[in-house]
Image 1 (cartoon, rainbow, N blue to C red):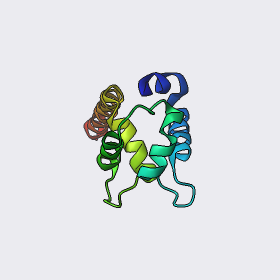
Image 2 (image 1 turned 45 degrees about the horizontal axis):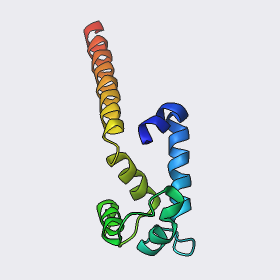
Image 3 (image 1 turned 180 degrees about the vertical axis):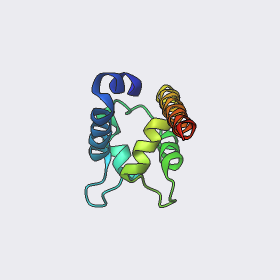
Image 4 (image 1 turned 30 degrees about the horizontal axis):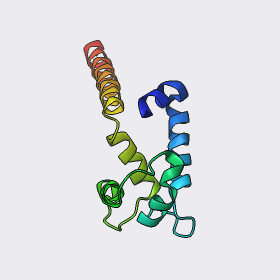
Length: 112
């Protein structure tokens, strides 16, 4: 679903929607997504059928700092990691940019 959103919304629009998704799932008092907030609000995203262990796995997979919750950055990174199509597209764009940079530097040094 994320690749289709990226295609329709563009980069900035996708990031905005990811932030909206984070805000929807987060515990308002703590400012992070906790197991309890994910469990209570998962039905808003159509995830009501996920078992407790599946929800916990999602949290654990995205929890980079080990605090047991997802901050906004961890949530966004997790969403990208769960969308291999986006990762491949990003990798291709990075490769293209690096190739252009190398060619430009090569041309610069050739001119001297």
